[in-house]
Amino acid sequence: MNLPRPLVLIVDDNATNIDLLVNTLKSEYRLGIAKNGSNALAYVAKHRPDLVLLDIMMPEMDGYEVCRRMKADPRTDGIPVIFITAMSETVNKTTGFELGAVDYITKPFHAAEVKARIRTHLSMEEMRLRLASQNEILEQQVASKTAEIRDMLNASIQSMALMVEIRDPYTAGHQQRVSQLACAIAERMGLAAETIEGIRIAGLLHDVGKIRIPVSILSRAGRLLDAEHEMLKIHPQVSFDILKAIPFPWPVAQMVLQHHERLDGSGYPQGLSGDGILPEAKILAVADVTEANSSFRPYRPANGIKAALDRLTQQKGTRYDAQAVVACVELFDDGGFAFDYGANGNGNGDFR
Image (tube, rainbow, N blue to C red; front, side, top):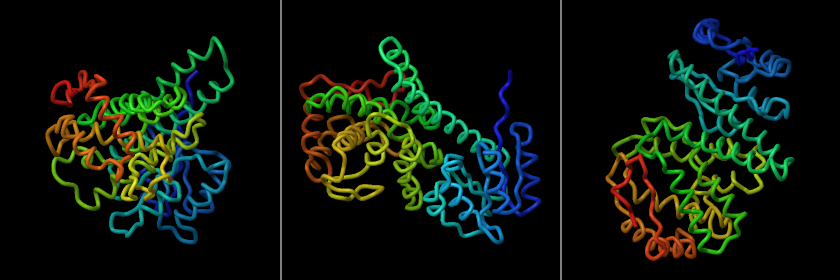
């Protein structure tokens, strides 16, 4: 039996915009239409669409208020919302993301872009729900089922990580390498195996929020504009929003949220410092910056592991946790650790 097509609700007071979106989406999705905020909330409560395309500028109740009310209702707070707005309108995108929206689409619409964004976010939501479901099963099952369910969990995690990496071939394998190094650092520091497992998963998912960053920014060969850099800095928060509802037995979402925080408070997105940062996130930060600084990026050649470790050591105890830095350096100096670039080809040989 074929599953029903996803239901997408279009909320816009402009009939022309509605017609354009209907013609673009009708072959792939079931569609609902609401021409004002009140009708949109009533439709969402009754039909629970899989995704809402929500105009911002509407009379009586704007899109921000509709989104706010949806996210305040436990029955509808999980429905992805994509705001639609005219390019000429002054829009505070930060407000939309803070309210819980997953994306923006600008008018005039480009059919391919609209379809791609909707497809991406429906896939992410499906993956998130599947992963959450598998975690619930994991808590209920014991003995013979444990290994099987862990395989399913790992497959879903790998799939989520791959969704990001296939968009940016220049950093393919980055999350896997960061995860491997973070686990090795944690093991050298004497952390418990159960804690290390949480770090492994956080490492594999720490950049999943880059699914929202345009490929043009990720693959930029030159220096980013200030606005582009600010856009890039939203990815830890986006990662957190994707992962926060999944009942991991470790604080995976918080680790991911904090992996760009720094001891001196110079990091983002929260500007945390010192003991305000999770120990696991401090380890993840060291692994992340070591891999990134040693590997090839579109804006520079690979620096190599020696240069990366020298730079890391210079900031030991100021930006990065001293114990984690020492463990990292020792791994490469005398522990025989090396990044495995495999078929990705993003390094200059075997860094040791």
